Amino acid sequence: MKQRKAQIKRKTKETDISIKINLDGKGLSSISTGNGFLDHLLNQIPRHGLIDLEIKAVGDIETGWHHTVEDVGISLGKAFKDAIGEARGIVRMGHALVPLDEALAQVAIDISGRGHGEIDAKFAHASVEGLPSDLIKHFLEAFATEAKITLHANILTGLNDHHKAEAIFKAFAKALMNAITIDQRRKNEIPSTKGTLT
Image (cartoon, rainbow, N blue to C red):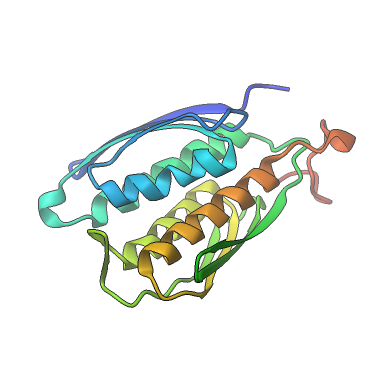
């Protein structure tokens, strides 16, 4: 089986982003976006998904965080799609239900070849630790679109916005890990009745 790794560079007038990803990693990470809370959320992916991940992002933050968050989501999605390749042998679907104190988040993923995100993530405040809260949903949508996965993510309960955001990213990481796991019973097969996930 080929190595499930990818490297992406994306440079526009708004952002300069480089990403390296290894789906068969140990959870190693080096993440710098300029926003501490975004870094914290993104670090949940390697920590709980056992995916090695390097992200370096520089954006026009004088205009706000939108461009940086969106372009990191786009770039990470593209890197994931490149790394998963034909998706031979994967379990394909994964889900996770993750608590963090009073918060509870649920994520379900299908590496379907069809990019679609349904995100129900409501926050009490417009900003969570310096990150506009609406960009949490936007990041997940951008990732799903470019990764060509179906992603359903819900915050089921919670009072603390930090807890809710962190729980949804932990659930996202665990669901990804479950979906990309190689099923030893069909490690050379594409998990689709169509014979393709592209």
